[in-house]
Length: 341
Length: 222
Image (tube, rainbow over all chains, first blue to last red; front, side):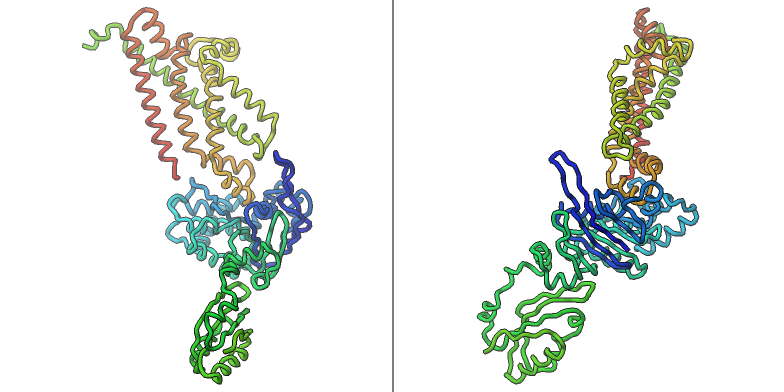
């Protein structure tokens, strides 16, 4: 769907040349939610603007659905932009227009007749859940509502790709989740390809299928979100993963855990994918004569499934403990006994 | 009673002069709005990193605006006498004042338009571009509506300044309250004529300010 080949962008500044995007190669599949994460200044804002031609590459090419965006200009580029729409961190709504007139704006640009515009605006307002707020001005809306208007506006001309430029960074955590859910919903319902940039790992975790990590203009790591979370390779990726899992230093060392929980057996469980969706723990407690003590753990949901680790202390008769461990093995959960009596 | 206090005031003359002042101010404000807006938009769009970024055009427009904004109005009128005579065949009467009024005020307003346009959130312009908007669409549907309150308050300030300019133009015979105050009031030493002219000008200015402020407030949905 989207193909970036050897893409570079250099800006000339007062302090010399600044390489914002450095030889990036990314392919995004149809209907995929692709995340690009990086700290500010990593070049991700420039990268996303290369996708709709708001910036022109210094070298390399950008093609979206077979069309060369990087070499288009004039009317061809403007038409292409109607199919590659964008939402923004600060929403960028026209304060002088009401909600419905803001959503109508891209339709006016596309030259849609007034009656058809009104019809489409109505649909979009339903889709993003803003019914009753049609006549409100942006200044009367909350941040989350403004972003809903932004999303409706971006969807107006039935785009193939939606670009999200830090779309939730200005929102509180609860609103962020609601907006992310809306994006997933749109992705599923309309089959829309979504490319988003962010500096927040939980956004990647929650909605992306694949992720690219950017540092100093380069993509340093790329892959399936679940894989990246489980086995981050680069230091920067580890730091991003630590945003969710907490830094590793904060986790007690295994030796320390053994010291703290001397009785019973200490078991480490590693969950990947579907396993976490089953009530393994509650069955364990119900079916076996063991006391289960959760020592430490974290589990996170991603679009590819969940992943996480859990440390349990099992207490009871040796037979019961063994049966319980056998049960866990049978459930296909990676189980590791890390201490003995 | 009034005749005793203001022995020299001829109310018919005063009425006619007021109408002339209003006519000059309104016409000049109208033309200033259109020309100043065009110049301001040109200055904005040709500035660096804008859609029509062009150093030469920007410099030339900027120089024109700065030069005519800097010439004191009373001198500008005198400088423009040949131009006015060429254009209208006369240098007397309200119409003859218009070229100088417009050339004096339009650059002043152009600056205010530029400031107003610079105040627009760049993200909004970027959003419009990302939707595939043409530059003309951006001008009519983004730049002008989004800067409307500042454009209107700037126009109010310009209109008030223009009322003052018409009075100055009156000194060289443009007509209106300025001529009345200068010729009858000052040169024939009829202080009461000057006083009444002043009060009428003040009333005109207050009305302009009040109308301008209320329209501006109404246009602002932020």
